[in-house]
Image (cartoon, rainbow, N blue to C red; front, side, top):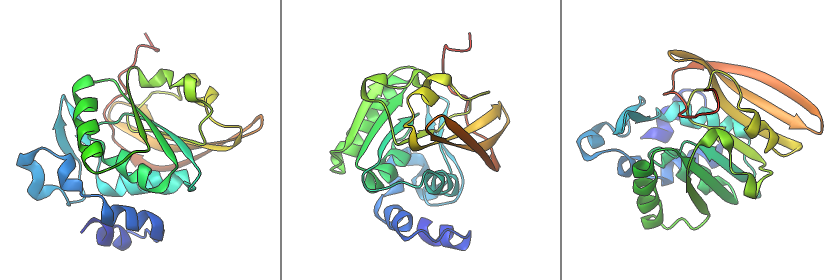
Length: 203
């Protein structure tokens, strides 16, 4: 299963592993891919989008250092799988998806699974969700050539963490930004490949 694969790749956070054991990944992929649902690679979910490989989901989740009281903004609901993992670990999750069909499908799955701490929105994720800011944690599940300034503005100044892939279309670097008061600290982690963030802010 997914959790055992993650242990083999060095993940030791027991709360994250428990979340991966609990969330049924096969429910978040199209029926024709369900036999591959627990393999450690991305899968298509329609609308030219993908569900990320479990290891990348786990790594980004670990970099967020989620606390039980954390309020999280997720950019790119996609299939809803990462959303479910976040909802297992955090107090509230605010998730934005640009493609309405994906948002609707994810919402139905997550509601059927009984999650009541997830809030959904369809829109340009690079603009964030300012009505509920600031957020303790922000995660972006799509690649951006640079950090959207609106997201940085909506990040808490009390050791807020933002994790996102930054770079060009076919190669990005998983980047973590910590915001503490007026200080910004950036660290760089694994190389990765995500679908591009669908946004109008760079036009």
